[in-house]
Image (cartoon, rainbow, N blue to C red; front, top):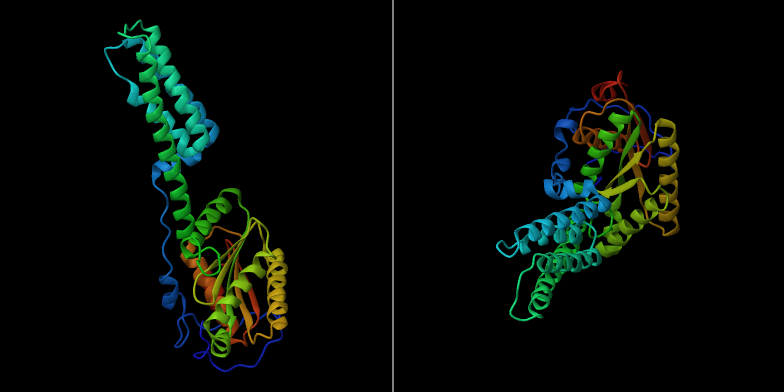
Length: 340
């Protein structure tokens, strides 16, 4: 975020918390919730198809068990109907399911199982061939087809996972992008509502980042952004998340984190970031606004918006500070914005 449009204010000490620096949410020159245009350019999350989500929810063990039952069913039907009806194509479904959900190795194993079951059903049904080797030849051809299907489907899965990851990752820093972050926030909102557990969402902006680009060029600015993500990741838990939402704007999601723990965690992050930038003689600071959700949250858009608004007010109060507010049953977003 460029700071040229910010009003001149006095400095705030490193890590100092800016508390209750309130400006009316839609006053002139202040981007209130209805005026935060930069939030609107964050891509809305696109979830996988219902079929993929269903298979992912089932999990590998359930898929394998289901595939075994399907092959047994198809083999039974193949035996019962003899040579009058062909069931070869139906073996492809369990093979494809396993190859997609569990991987190539299991897909190949089920391809061999499918070919063996077909051969056993065919021989047991008493089908007479002109040559004794014909059923084994046919079984080999079917095995080849099953293997091709298993390899193709597992390859499609790997390609889909790779593209899915790229679509949800910021290519410059390796952090999650806005699409992935919205997914995580909405998931955490559902989890927090179900289990009545708090979580914290923070919005971080790099103060005076333009000076880095002006002095060292965009390559130096890009390097600093990568260092920022690395520093934040080194100081959060594996269950936490960091996303880049704009040029020099980041969001942090801290599950299972109430007001006290959020204050400690975010002060630590800010302190480590300042240590890193000072060691590299970078003329930047870090303004952080955070919202702790104790009660039912309203929406991902609103939460990210209010955290952005709190961060903006930190910058108006002097930059390089931290402000945390709590949203609960008795204290709404509007009350947070309006109180002084």
